[in-house]
Image 1 (cartoon, rainbow, N blue to C red):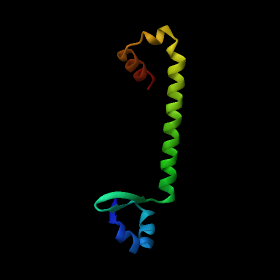
Image 2 (image 1 turned 45 degrees about the vertical axis):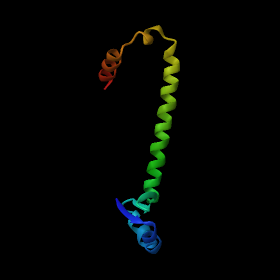
Image 3 (image 1 turned 30 degrees about the vertical axis):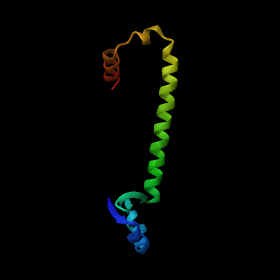
Image 4 (image 1 turned 180 degrees about the vertical axis):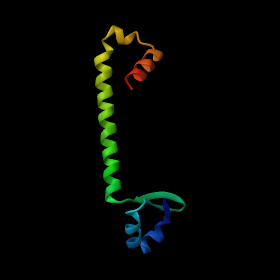
Length: 89
């Protein structure tokens, strides 16, 4: 990832936009990251990852609610769960 200061980013903005199509650009101020320039494609990918993560969290919450009342599920140990997960792979 390319790192540039905010002053450099102001003077080289057009170049950074072109460069961001190949890799993200980190912009710093006083040595600390303050912003990133990313391509539209990268931003869409980040949004997709966020949506998939949110979907997984909702699914897991629903799963936990559904299995919380199950006495069989309550009796499972961590080892039992690991074994079941590996069997399903």
